[in-house]
Image (cartoon, rainbow, N blue to C red; front, side):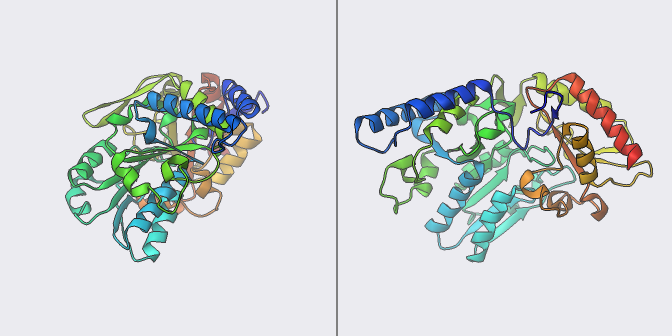
Length: 390
């Protein structure tokens, strides 16, 4: 990548760290054998794989068998929903109105089979109304699945509060944690859920590898009796991608910040990324042509989203802004790459109650460890140019 290019789309994907690439190359060289093979080099690879699994488990204060390797968050989420559909003929699932496409696609499959899918409404900040929890979480609910940090608007859901209620009612709780790990690593035993999906490329690791965190209760649902092999505890078949798994472990090692919980709320440690976000927010808050979307207080520490208004105070189409930024060597986005590339209006903003003329105008800026203050100053100048130009 050109040295003058400023990358501010870390919620989409993150650059591969040098030590991660080195570890991947080393594993490709030394552990390329199939870990399911029974000859000595296959056994060598299998031992190496389980050592990495144990080390990753230790990072999360999890048990060895809690760690299920997948190709990423989308597959992890798909496994949860497909396992539910295999185990029960029909049932009820609760999601929010601001979920990722992976969850929407999975619930649509269940809906076509006759399942009841309840979409928990959100307020103007994109947060579910927890005062409705007793009406939403009915006794016959099989699963609740919520996105912890929303990729398009940055809003954090009250996952601990919901998790405690699900535990009381013996309802399985899955969290889409895709955007979380870039902001700190957590103690798995402290998170009030049964399943959590992660993707390595969101926190400096390789694409094509991820984790589904589980517990004993959830593994009873996930275990596939049709899989005779012991791969991933009979939950996910396929040859283990050892080099990618090794690279993912290195990227987890690179995470220095910790996430703790106080009164059900996550506490993120202050770091360079969160300081850059605060600097940017402070610069734009009083600008009448910039309207922040999502929550001010309950937001991912590396994320800012907003609607940009021109001199006539009309919303500027996000693609005009993104293309202008790209022409000036700055990368930003309008939200999830999976959905924003479709050219359709933002379903997330629509479900939050935004007007039709605003649904094409959301801008997302997401910071990473490689960014610096001068990057933000450059962005601010270009934002002001967009206000004048468009």
